[in-house]
Image 1 (tube, rainbow, N blue to C red):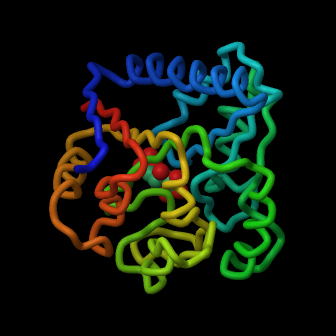
Image 2 (tube, rainbow, N blue to C red):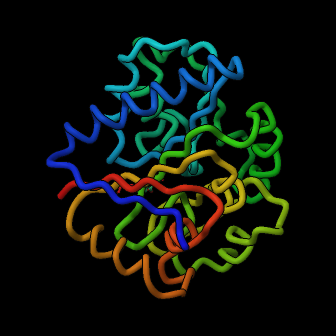
Image 3 (cartoon, rainbow, N blue to C red):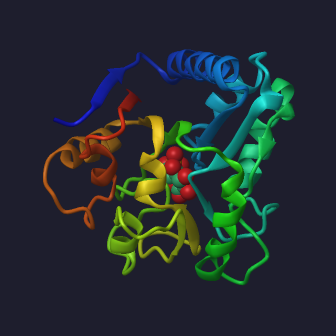
Length: 233
Ligand SMILES: O=C1O[C@H](COP(=O)(O)O)[C@@H](O)[C@H](O)[C@H]1O
């Protein structure tokens, strides 16, 4: 049986308030228990207001370490950079005290760059405390994109890889993404998306078995890590 819970909200403001408070409480609890906490976030447009709300909550952010589930292989000051969004929306206000680990480095491409990023990510204890994922209209999550030639490696539970380079067919930019085993090595995964188009994709993804068609299936159809889905139309 899969470990999915689905919660519908009246609007995005309600999700952002509820979700930011939930993340803050979970991080605070982990800091009280272990002296530190980790948060893995996604980029794209959906979580920006969530980031703003979260950054305004006063917890011990200096004990929190943040990274991304995926990144476009662009300069971190490029408007398409997920890191840029995190710096502009999340590492602000109280959350400016948090430590951030970048997925991007100076390598020419994410295929070699990912080997160095894996070392950078050693700074974060496992399991991650919280992973926040989004979902694209093509059924990708993080940068696990449909139809890419190395998707099998990205989804393999035995590859030994934490992150790898991806060249999407359905989107711009080479990417770096956390692999499936890295994402699942989390106490809780939250999947946040909005709108009826994505709801249809989500519903299709809870059935069927083709991971290459809808890679989000790999997150939904597993029984090791709880997945909490937050949605509003
Ligand atoms: O390209 C990406 O897309 C997904 C979904 O983004 P959204 O704009 O539709 O919310 C995102 O989760 C991922 O981190 C990002 O790199």
